Amino acid sequence: MIMSKMPLYVLAALMAVGCSTIENHQQAANAASESAREERMEAVEVQLDSVKTPEDALARLAEGNARYVADSCLNPHHNHKRVAATASQQKPFAAVVACSDSRVPVELLFDQGIGDIFVIRTAGNSVNDDVVMGSVDYAVEHLGVKAVVVLGHESCGGVTGAISDMEKSDDSKVDELLSVIRNDVKPYVGHKDSLDAAVRLNARVQVDRIMASKHVQKQVAEGRLVVKSAYYNVRSGKVDF
Ligand SMILES: [Zn+2]
Image 1 (cartoon, protein in one colour):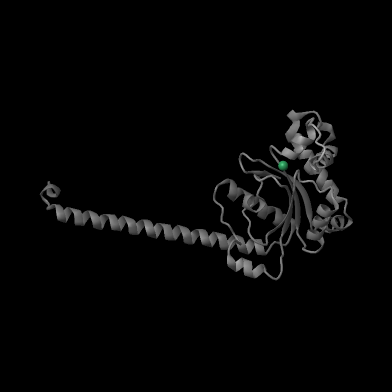
Image 2: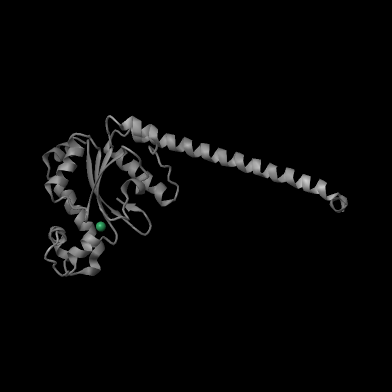
């Protein structure tokens, strides 16, 4: 009743005050949430900068992937301050050997930033090549990474091609690539329904190949390095270690 007797311009003024109060509350809530996010991001950056052991390295990767799966990425080390800080030297805490598949963006799926991960990508994440294996050795010997993870993935085209009876094409290096992977997943060749098992075997074979390096063996024996295979689910975004 009181409202109905109120002149319209007074009612409009009161509503405007009410709206701006709600807006102010919303802005304050947004600012508080942004500030909490920045605090969490800075805490993560401190952790990433202080990785000392193989266990730390695997934990940072697993935590980053958990944020990615939960759609709550913090994008640490993803700014110009970090660009400047890493310009003269890199000190990544992990190396990841992944497939070149566009659905496997390594830094994104581990929620890491500039200078955190030394990434090596080939179709089918094979290290059966001097250039690739040399890259792994470089990360271990010269950069001092604490973990090397070989990341196979769901629906891998390279492994699918390797276990399928694909037509040979005369003028393509793809055949050579597939024959290299095929050699590593022999038990599954001709069994297209065993793709997941073949992907996991392929990753383990690459781990064995990396572990054949004397430098790698020494570091692992001294507890300064871990070499592990893992599996990335392209549907959920989750990495199974
Ligand atoms: Zn792949």
